[in-house]
Image 1 (cartoon, rainbow, N blue to C red):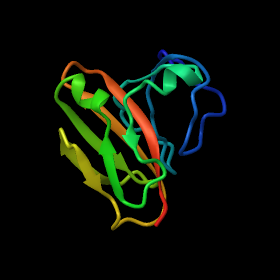
Image 2: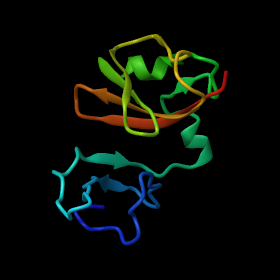
Image 3: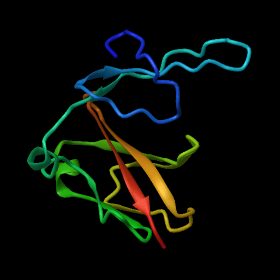
Length: 128
């Protein structure tokens, strides 16, 4: 966080404990380091604030996922949905809705990227 290593943050999933800029760097079996990932800004919010943030719905979903009006109101965006293994399953520009019903049940992560560099991240649960 903010350019500093986070002790113990060594698994595939990390839940930030404070607001800040985060990056990921991987180490392979030989000890070689990957390049640093893009910077992801994480904002801690309260329950009332979180309900007003742009999001995908319904969540959980049976397959059809829609972007709420707050996502599009911020300008042009790119939506990427990633499975638990890090595979990109959707990469679309300005979608009003997407269909992930061809995927396995589970948790998926999404990133909404705006032209101004702002990112919104979240997760969605698929249950068919």
